[in-house]
Length: 141
Image (cartoon, rainbow, N blue to C red; front, side, top):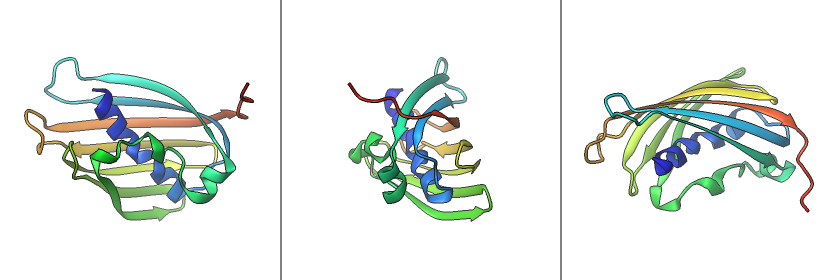
């Protein structure tokens, strides 16, 4: 299940593509559900310090993805604060899906629908992510 949450995190770079995030400490809450799979629903929260460089070069959160997953985004569209795109993973976890949501420099909400039928015993996965900037990054030390 941790790998599925990691797969779900691949949607985060879309925020950087759509609306410029404001650097600082961000809190993410991810809810993953897999209809028909008992006990598969999970909720995960995390924080990440988004640096100005990560905003500038669009690399925020990309390091959280396992390169073996072979995921890519396509068909990115934006209309104001609304965005959508398609996802395809061709590595160990074969899946396709779509993402839609809205973002501002201070907050983001998105929903993802994934078809994981390319993996034995798997089917649909639904995920929602909400994120908000909670302040400045804490000094390391």
